[in-house]
Length: 200
Image (tube, rainbow, N blue to C red):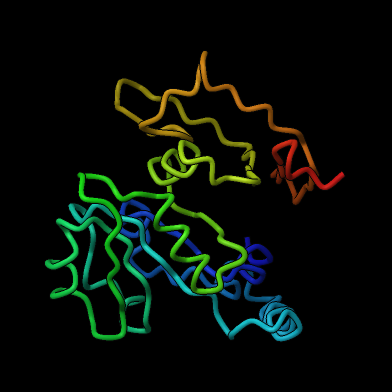
């Protein structure tokens, strides 16, 4: 995760993930402090600023305008309906941009705006709803999936899956290919790519 953040121009996060990480910074050095110097050097060599831009994709309903990351400057990508209220609530360092007149953010337009600002590599840590919106818009090139040695049953309580809000089977199958597998202790770090993006 630290390496992915170190290479990213933008880290894209959903409001649910934001609420679940009240002190989150989405910085490479927070993911793996021991490699902080190496991450900083990598960003320098790549010609990137010290930290990636953090952008929140939200319809506005569960967004926390007091999250500390907003004080340092972030982007809020929201709907035309929610934009005025969010603009009035967030710190001056944070910019609010509107994409879509409906209840959901137009993910394709939001990503296009990030690209226009020079974001070549966008890392989504958004959560299942953001991930679903990016998948539905055809904006996902690679998937990094961690397999943990813990089992979590549903037990009658609803538990979110990897993708929420988009039906993928049977009509919208996506043929992912394994690009790499890494292991750290009992965790597996899997990297999948689409055929058009596969690294060879």
